Length: 347
Ligand code: KG4
Ligand code: ZN
Image 1 (cartoon, protein in one colour):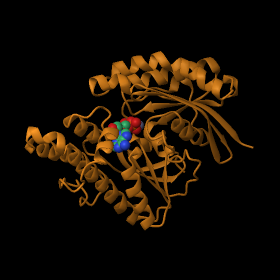
Image 2 (spheres, helix red, strand yellow):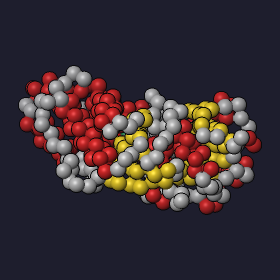
Image 3 (spheres, protein in one colour):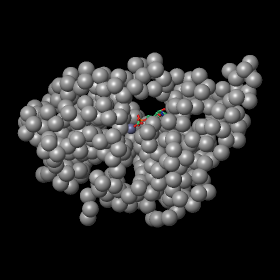
Image 4 (cartoon, helix red, strand yellow):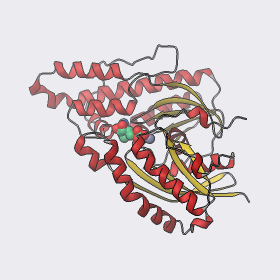
């Protein structure tokens, strides 16, 4: 029986993630998973300060590694390697995870499996134990990224479209800040939206007729700004929920329409949804109806695994490892910008 066991590390932004993933034949089990969130720290500044994030990663990463190995009841010698997010992300933050992985790789004499952060979000949709059928279409929506990716086989990606300006999650965060909601904006807006009227404001659905698969959320954010400025100060509090609901509806409608267009172009077998914004219930429901129209299943990560975590890095890592992606410690570096397609195993 073929078995691969990896320690996985994720530090690209404001969550320190460490996990142990084990693949036996075709099924992956997460033996241990720990996430140390820095949200409380970054809420004070209303966003992530890279150096602050890095300092927090340094403080918690070693105890987390000790903890997950104990939880998984494993000795380092029993591991096949160390999967680590090498990019994209905040350079000082990424560097902590990568340097930790390099040190462990050297000390334990185990290979490193470099993982692209978005690859992790794609594989997060399979963390429920779902199988994947190819070709699959993945919609990845997070604080830093908005992507439609064709997954032609395991570890094989083709980017169909991306955002030309702000990411979907970034728009949630900026609009939340505008209307006085706390960081991160996504959960705060979606909660307030339940009390508002999503038809109260007619915000644009950017690039839904562009004929390509790209996104843009900067103009939508500006429309919200103008609408907000027009509301008299003494009415702002009572109109806030309508703004939140109408903005959220515009983002979801845009994501759903663009996904729908892509699904019309090819007989995709499965739709995958990942990234922090995937935690949004309205978005999940809308995409479920989009996928059922073309009779394919929608796979969404298990609860609590939408945001950044190392389970998804381990999940992608075991497939990468089995496809031959093994590096020595001196071959691996953090890269703030790196293209997902470069991680594809060409077949
Ligand atoms: O994947 P993630 O944890 O980090 C990045 O790689 O960026 O995504 C974080 C993003 C934030 O912008 C946050 O506001 C958004 O995901 N988010 C949501 C929800 N929960 C988190 N956006 C909309 N609705 C939510 N329920
Ligand atoms: Zn992420």
